[in-house]
Length: 540
Image (cartoon, rainbow, N blue to C red; front, side, top):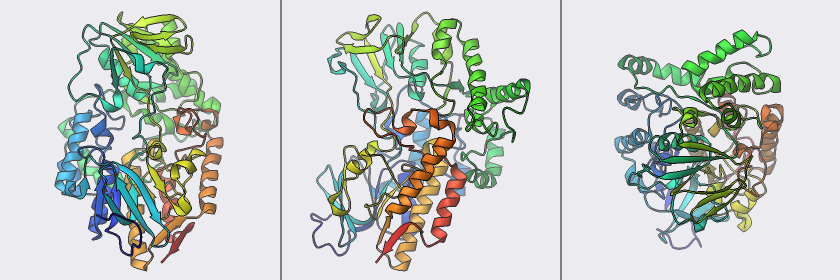
């Protein structure tokens, strides 16, 4: 380890990789295959990323298990067997641990170690990385494999610190099981996490109060064990299907009609939606008809259909109406999957607290208070989401050219080129950073594309004798402008969600995910690389 960044001529290692989730493990593996020296840093005690940190009851991935896995090693694909259609968190963590052991990756990571500062030496073209253990290490390249959803949104609820009961946070759940039997419980938040955890708590709690500000769309998971035949069929076609899906819009290659939603009859349209609702991934809705994500009237047909399903599942018409989103177009907030979520509101022990009707005034020592009055509870579960994409730099000092802090740059709105680099921060690569598909795709497909692009880039630079690369401001601005333009063309123009940074007070409103689709994004990256990395400044 190096104690100072002064007078550095050669770094300790070629690359520092921050994060040991799916992106970090693949990045380390790829770099080792190139013969590079790599040092990984992970704040947790093991690999797994979000599946290490998040352990709340009911947690499952909303992408089918056979899709939510690596494609870069055929032996790995063939040997691993997923137990369920949507496997639970323990199974996904076991998969991550299996990958780490199979490829001997853990020895390349320093666990229980948090990045606190990274400083770029503009003369030597080397980063000095400092951790909370006090160690420093120098590297030519830094790969931030920290994920778009890795930093919880700060708890800004008034009075939260006064609550004398049990405060639970879905992003840091206790390692020992929590018994909700006989307890009065409040769950704050109705995004994917809130929906999953509420469905579980409702089974045993004496009373459950679900505090909802903005309702989410949710469709049934239809989760079940996978049959031996289903697993065999997937494995027989893995290689060809992976190739097809990585060039699709969503990374899943889901079927669509190829028609406008407005050119078919309501009966034909609803029959297609019903088949999706009963049998397919909820993400099939996005590509169901050609215009549902660009035309407001076409988009409304999905909302109308799903709204009818909520009314079927919830017995009380007044509660059903409160659970139906009406303030944003379908697809502009995360669509959730559930196992009996809407049905919990048919139980006598479950109460929906509509914060639009009666705003939350404060957390109290004994519970919470809305405009309708005070409610006492024993446990409060905070499921309030993440500071998406940019949260990772909120408590880390990443210092680029001229002493500029990335946190301050992104405070005015996160900007990247290809979701990979930010101007003014040479040799710093982002995996699925802002303005990349990531959260609007099968994220593992996007991770693999980005890691391949980054590691191929490092190989190109090394082979050509370059030791510095950075995005040009002009290319970055053009990329961000294009992405914002797509946002104005789609139904996202009418949305204010965490996709735009609007869930965090004071955060700049900018389109954070790339809306162009996985396949077109891959093609754009490949074109840039083939053109000698157009839009990047390379230097020796």
